[in-house]
Length: 398
Image (cartoon, rainbow, N blue to C red; front, side, top):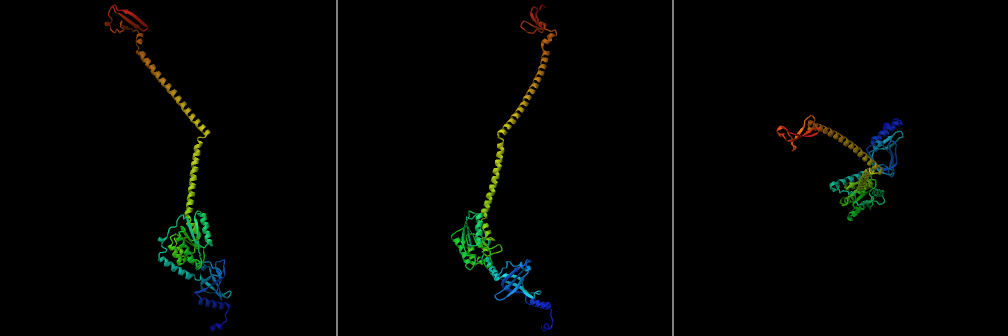
């Protein structure tokens, strides 16, 4: 040190020595304070002042570390940061370079919640076998929340839109502060003692982890576990959680989502009815179109054309049949005529007249019997001789 006092140093050399001394001597620091003058830059770095009642120090958290912070820092937040001192030589100033940040008391709260979570998990409060089914179409939905909060209005609006026939019973409760947990637990017990509803939505809108602590208190956890009415836990936003989420029969990421879950059965029924209506209308339209198509066949003009076509077809068939009959008859007559001529020729060939025409005669006795031999022609008998052109009587002399 004495050597340094006797040595002439440039500003840069002195700043370098200060930087080395501070950065090597002050690292791994854990500092608590209140955020002030918070200035997030467009590059993603956070610049702010960390102060307490009497002092303040400039601080920075670079983009490479901000992603680890699970909340959005705001003016007045009490936080605990870890890091070391950093010297900015261009200005000759020093600042606290933060590597992590958490809300003051956040670590203790998380440790307490984790311990309580293990305790009730060991008791079986979170077991799946203890979960009661949420009714698909509840007739009455109970809501345990603040009567003035936005969460209640979201629930009412969604239920009115998706299931307007459902009765909604609001069980007003304090959801923040020391009296919140007993208020919530009492409302849950009241709903069960009087059987006020078919399903309960227990929750509130978003907030800090301290704001959500009532939903992790022992009296609330026990009331939910002992409830005979199915309970939907809807605490905070999607990234928020409370022990009520684990012990409840169903966890909803937001109060709005809880309203959607308990009304899903009604929405499914409405969609099913809508689909059936659409199918019925299509079936009716198809049947009507088929009936109209069939009815057009019986239109006066169409019927006349159809009958005319039928008559024309029948006339055509009749004309063909008549022509066929006449042709068949002529062919039959021609065949019979030929056969008759042939028979006539055969008869003529066999006719005795034809024989007589060749010079022969038929000899008959007086009884009309044929005389075929001389013994039958007894002398003195009278015979009849038949020629081709007539008859003569003859007397047999010898």
